[in-house]
Length: 318
Ligand code: NAP
Image (tube, rainbow, N blue to C red):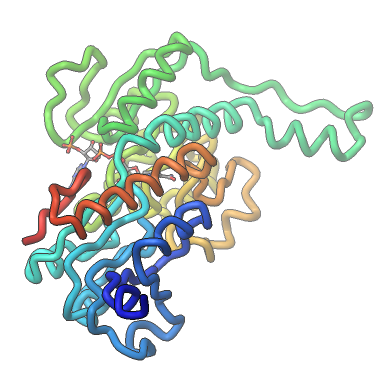
């Protein structure tokens, strides 16, 4: 019995997962929590062949280097911008993520932020709760229906956002790195030309060094005084300093944000702004989606330890 237990694979838990995933994982693996002080505080790093991490935490080069037997990085999320793919690739470590299962909920969040921002739902809620409704009325707002919606990054989530907004009789345009010949929506050559056309600009592009500041000060300025910006991608994709300045000076009408730089300790200037709706990175945070994401992580672990093809590999190991 103890010999069988000792032979179980060791999986390093870099980020927490719900108990509904941990319980079945404990049946199959020895789960090792990453100490607050990092891998140096582990009794041993030997035999840790897989780790599970969140999209926000990822796995940097130092963590990968500290785990000599690592063969798999399983990301509990679709974004893998915080995983050092070069370091993983050099060591032939496989990387997996959880695509598709979260697409609908994240796209819903983009729509929810656009509606909440444009129709001042949060302000309305505060007014009703304050008991001052009999004395004061909110100003009239802009619409979402019938507006021009521009999507930066027409990947799985970007496409799903477009399908949802199509139901609001909007015109849809997009900018994407690679051509999308099957899309009937209007393609723009740059994020800035898209912003100049759009009333509502939605950022759904992948994060990482290559897309850092893709929505630049120039792009934000092109959106104009009536424009709304929604970001459900990563805090890095928008020039956040330029965004805050544009919001403070009302160079754009407002922003609905699910993602920020330095989450969760975000720039406190956001707190004083009246033209933002702020969401604490909740795009995939539903029971159904988190259950489905956990199942994908577990399927990748199971395939890895069985020597089978990884269901959702971003990077194949060897
Ligand atoms: P996806 O299908 O892989 O789409 C990625 C999009 O980013 C595509 O449009 C892709 O363009 C583009 N892209 C990737 N690398 C790029 C680069 N270097 N330069 C320019 N464009 C680049 O991913 P998805 O499932 O739609 O997810 C998109 C992102 O949403 C994730 O990466 C993640 O950051 C974010 N997300 C946020 C939440 C949340 O809770 N707020 C939840 C899940 C995901 P191509 O078509 O040319 O490849």
